[in-house]
Length: 305
Ligand SMILES: [Zn+2]
Image (cartoon, rainbow, N blue to C red; front, side):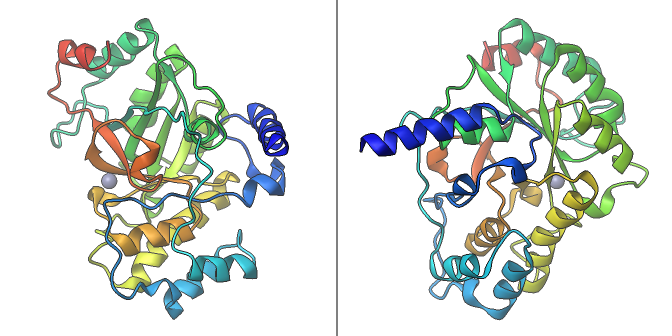
């Protein structure tokens, strides 16, 4: 028992040196081997899980992070129970999309409104964290800062760089942007150059949001795997950093989709289910707080006093 506690404290010490935007290759293999996710209680497994199907195996094998042993382990075991910190704290993960004035839908937040929200969070003492910090807390018990908060942006719109990023920089706020890998570089979306610049600031992490943004629950299995594994590989290729977080397009997922996400070695995946994120929801089915364009600053301030 004492040995176990001593080992844990060593791991915590190592992890305290590991911040956001960190290359996992620098971590000892003992930490990597414990990577696992709790299954979400809300997902019912089908009678015959297809994780051992040839398609699943093909993609699991493709993932360069996995050895032969891991393929076997994943095919056999659903999703391994994690070493959970019993004092895991729920954390709000805010969901933004576009920050701008060209009104597409209710998901667009005006720049001045966004600036006022970040200013408020800063003034109220909120401290932005990244998914790596959340893992260090939920898994290894490293304490979170006071009033922790995660900011996320879906779809990787260009205005995340031109409008949101300067505001985030002003207050030194961190955020994760979930990019659609095939859309990177087009007229409305972030370019590789912009992504790299933001990552180099240490404030912005890049998560994956598939290759083409399909409803993963309705596409054929082969495409579903290609979207989940492929986006991670493409992003890793040009950022040189592992992608640890994933967002389901239009919040749609099922048992098979979550399994594939775990097999692709994402540590976290976020949904559009409302509420604070809690480790007990399942690390691959975390809830988020949607920030709509029509939310007043007064209402926002009441949500985050
Ligand atoms: Zn999306």
